[in-house]
Amino acid sequence: MLILGIETSCDETSVAVVKDGKKILSNVVYSSLKEHRPYGGVVPEIASRSHLEIILPCLKAALKKSTHKLEDIDLVAVTQGPGLMGSLLVGIAAAKALALALKKPLVGVDHVLAHIYAGFIDRGAGRTKLPRFPVLGLVVSGGHTLLLKMDSPAKVQILGRTLDDAAGEAFDKVAKILGLGYPGGPEVDRLARGQDPKRFFFSRPFLSKDSLDFSFSGIKTAVYYQAERLKKKPMNLPTKKLICSGFQEAVCEVLTKKSLRAANQFHLKTLVVGGGVSANSRLRQMLAGEAKKEGVKVIFPSMELCQDNAAMIASYGYALYRGGKRDRLDLPGYAQMMGNKKT
Ligand code: KG4
Ligand code: ZN
Image (cartoon, rainbow, N blue to C red; front, side):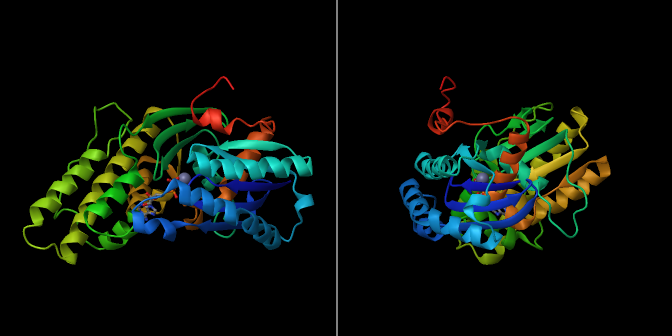
């Protein structure tokens, strides 16, 4: 089965063709990031205009790379939410039009859960087995931090979530405090490499002992006050690197400890990580090392699937379709995003 995936929830326009939910034939990603950089964050209006301009070229490129024609597509999967409303609407409108013209089924997909599905895609060489349910999912992106118990593609229970900033958001804000570029995550990761994380220690908000929720705004504020104290003398690059390392260590430790606590508590032996922050080198190292000690298998997506992309949407859409999900052409992207479950 050939699945066409469409993703337009934030600043990435992506179209993918995925075979049987696992094999990526093409995954074209265009990011309008450079247009947002001067503003230090994603500007919704710029993002939605960019999606409008680029979605058809992305579709053409994805089909060409897959060596298939539009008529070969069997299923259309699209990000339904959460995300920026104007951006989502572009992808949803395109998906509806294609499903209608091709007379093929349409499946709306939750973007956050799809990040976990990036770990269910065949990476070709090196990956022998894909994860099997039940799994523990850890989503760490710019907008979300969630711990999930997934018994099947559609049976998902939220075990923990951030009470304030998402992990990626904290990385971005700390980078801003330190005068680094946007998005901050990759830059903090790069600068922290090889540094001593103990030189600047930031306390770890473990909340209560049993809680699986997260809180990252306190660490970010601690970095802010540390930077303010150091401002008396201009902060040099070596100091920034040490702060990045101390901050990153604190975030990774919280994510690692809570994930393993959840695995233990719910007897889950496979942890699948997804979202932009799953590209973080220290998180990968720490989680892999600690999980091994606990007998938990950790699966990270390949680096190109950590960021927003349509292959994960196609893959998750296919899994949901196999489970019987079908959406009508009045796919309630709008209403679901707004939490109006009546529509
Ligand atoms: O999943 P994603 O591409 O978009 C959302 O759905 O939010 O995640 C973007 C986030 C940004 O906050 C970015 O700073 C962060 O992922 N990120 C990283 C790294 N690469 C991207 N954070 C830490 N380390 C990285 N290497
Ligand atoms: Zn995302």
